Length: 235
Length: 180
Image (cartoon, rainbow over all chains, first blue to last red; front, top):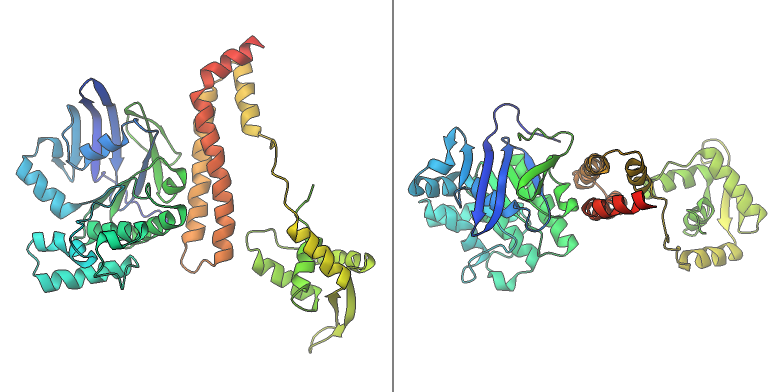
């Protein structure tokens, strides 16, 4: 069940501090994500969950503290290298899938591959395979506005995973879905991540969604305050 | 108070046609995979009571190459009773026995750390929710298993939400308990 690898964490945050204006979003948060594991980060609204995800994914830089990915200090990488790393090693899914509305499901999923230089026909072939894995077969030519919320979110997951990333960051991926569609999205994400050995950092305020993870870290006021019994989060 | 009724569940299984005790037990355990398996003794005792109360009757015996077994069928009165029971709403529990709340209060009374207790309880609940999620998402899990696990998951989730609210209000609760 728990296929989390042991040893060095793949991604490690240490004592992260991040302030937005006069608001402290993170006040010394530390966290480890190991290769191949699904880690749920839970906490109330405003506890700093999304800011933590943005720091870990290299989307924003922390004011203080370090983020280490696969031996490299993300918080010190030049923007060009960081953006390359986000394209090759990370996949991101938000509450609203953020698919490109003008593109079909197939084109949306193929896009990251084509941006990385994969020829169009090969990119489409792989995108079709990923849509099938996420149960969106037969909807390839639909645009996001023509899909249900669950289909759109599974398409967004296919897009996040199509480049075989090492880490997928999912920020409230079921937040906008009804409970059955949310379960289908989480089942698809958990099965696929475990099959492909992809680590997932899952942000959620919902315990039922967090229960798909191997373990859980709880945030409160910008710090990690509680971990479940199996958790070894550094303080 | 309507308890989970073995009588009515056996009547329900008999509603699809005459059957013997062994078969009823087997069908019960397959239909309700998360329930405690029925004991043979309980099945036979219940069937005898159904006959005594006029809700079921003996149709005959069936050996089918093996040992001879008594075959039961439901009566008209049994069908009416089943219909009445199945349509009756279960009473929503007004206040369920809440051991977690009792422990929080006792912890406050004894000068303990109710917040630490709630965190540990939350971790225990989450562990069980992960187990149930693994059961229901396992390849080949049938819908009865999924729905049984969902029932438990929803109740554990309700407990968790209550614990989160309680943890956020511990200061006020402590003042109230200490003042009483």
